[in-house]
Image (cartoon, rainbow, N blue to C red; front, side, top):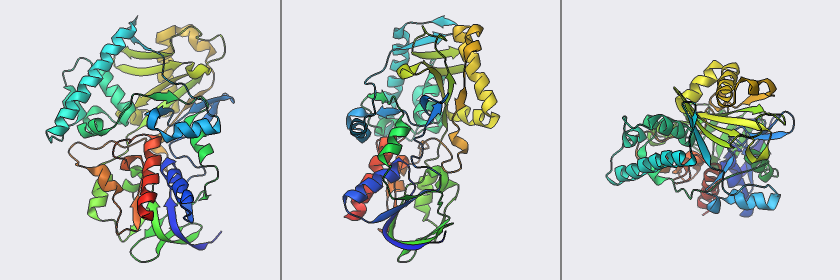
Length: 409
């Protein structure tokens, strides 16, 4: 189908940032269109069904910073239940169960690294989190694993400034029916054209022209909300080329990788286990959740370089990795009743190419530079462009909303 249309505003990408931008544009009466390369909206928010009935989030799952997260109010209005707070995490280290106090000690090691990251930023030092943790830190394996979950990158790949600038309230509430399902429900009435990748964006003139397989679209202003994985892969050709400062900002905010793996747990299988387990055995570290939110599944998370490596090995390797962990935790008899397996693979998703952004050490204020518009007509938003809520769905939403507020002014 060919098209040639004009809009005051075109939003590229229908993830959380694009949907937040669209909601703000609609509230302001700005006629606009969203173009989404994928077959669905939601971006890195994706809920699927395990064993045909269990909602599992392959992407974002936690309402982070819940007291200032706009998705909490949206969840309330749409009837999406969430749990306030989380059960204690019990460590299992080298075959022995430890007390919840042991995990509190590990959490204190993370807090100490955060304090050093703040000191580093105040001193103007562009250090990595690894430098803040110390390479001889006895808890380095756990700290590096947690970095993979928080930033989708290992400690040496993350600027200390990212840790010190993120404004965390400590409220991380899981969405029972799925955060991805919530984001999709929120954006259900958005004006979006799916399966419509922008191949070239000609922004040098007026109007701007977006070339797509479904025809050209003209716009007064364009808001680009695609991931830095897409920007850095040159999946969209910008004509003229983006200025060096904008390209450098995107390159300083590469996407890492972070994935979940799931097994269906039929009733009667692994019933009396702690819900959250910090697992460490030899060179394997994992956060494992058993029947989270009362769902009949087991889930583990992996991030950073290890997540990239596991994606390259393929789903059978990820399945075996999780089976080995469950066997060590609960015995080989527990494996006999395992049901369907599912794994996410964000690194090789062609429309995203990673999980979320980690600022490279020594890269300055790259997030602000990524958000800075060009000539008042080409705008950028997304989790990577958030100053203090990056790596989150609500940070992406607020970034899109704020960009439309600014361009409308």
